[in-house]
Structures are given as structure tokens and as C-alpha cells.
Image (tube, rainbow, N blue to C red):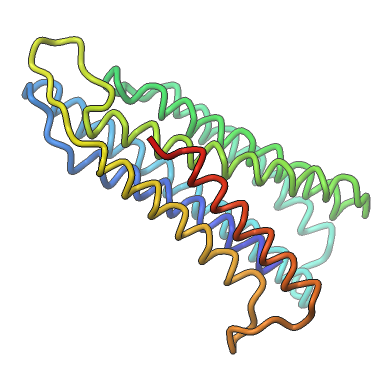
Length: 229
């Protein structure tokens, strides 16, 4: 559960990084700049709300495991969680992003929708003990993370000018910025592998865990290679 919590908070942290870049971005036209600023503020609030929702999602499971609440109370809370998550996702449709950022918002929304599906399967696992539901939840979580990463790359492509405005006033930036961002994301993924599989001493508790860590790091490296411009 602790690993799952860290993963979900990591997703939200990445999304918050995206919106911090949006807010700090200077558009060439004042009207567009104001539009982008408002869009960034609204998107930041959505991502913060999702982060808070996911943090509470797993903290309530901890309370149940520690005997502070009953299983019935946990499942009642989870029903409310799904309703709140659906309401937050609807807020993506009310955003008014600049044209270049629409695809990144779509990816963020898709990531949230996939995370919602993951949560639904996770709840099914808690409710019935169905291990297949847990597997589906884990798979959908990984998909949500991939969409989140793609959304960041898509946004950064727009920000650096790799994707350009239709207006005459364009700017072109070197692709080194995107390269650095892809490297940064990959390194964060590797750190996440460390937090999942290494103990407090930075060692492995078993050979099997070391193999899982090795596979995790390889996936991060593979992602970096696939997303390099």
C-alpha cells in the first residue's frame, strides 16, 4: 500500500510541475498570456485536488488496516471517492487552454480517467478479494503514469517552440530543453524504482526484489530512449 501511495503522489507531483511551467510561461500576445495564466491556475487546482483525493484514498485504507474504521465505513468512503473523482475529471472540460496545450490537457485528463479506473478495480479487490481486480488496478495505474509522462513531454514540446503557434510571431528553441526534461523524468522514474525496491540502507531484501528493481530501471531507460527527440 505504501508503494502505491508513493506512486500516486508522484503522478500528482509531476502534473503540478507541468502547471508550474504553464504559469511561468510568457506568451507573445498579452491576451494569450492572460488566457494561459488563468488556464494554468485552473489546471493547477484540478491537479492539487486529485493529489489530495488520492492521498486520502490510501490513508483511509491504512486507518482500516489499523482498525480505526470498519470495512463498511471504508467502502462507503470509497463510493464517495469515486463520485468526487468523476466530478474533478469533468472540470478538465471547462478549461480553456491555448491551442498548443490542448493535447497535453487531453493526456492529463486521460491519465486521471485511467487512474479512476485503477481506483475502481482497487476497491473491487478490497471488497471481494479478487486478485485479478488487483492486477487490473496495477496495470491501469501504470497506464495512467505513462499518459502523465506523455502529457509532460507534449506540454514541453509546446512550451519550447518545437510545436509552434499559427500566428506570424513564432519562436524556435533548441531541443536541448526537451532533452533535459526527458532525462529528468527518466531519472525521477529511476528514483521511484529505488524507493519501491530498496530498503532504508539502499540495499535489497532479496534477490527477487533486486530483479524487480533491475526491470524497473530498465523500463525507465527504455522510456527515455523512446521519448528522446
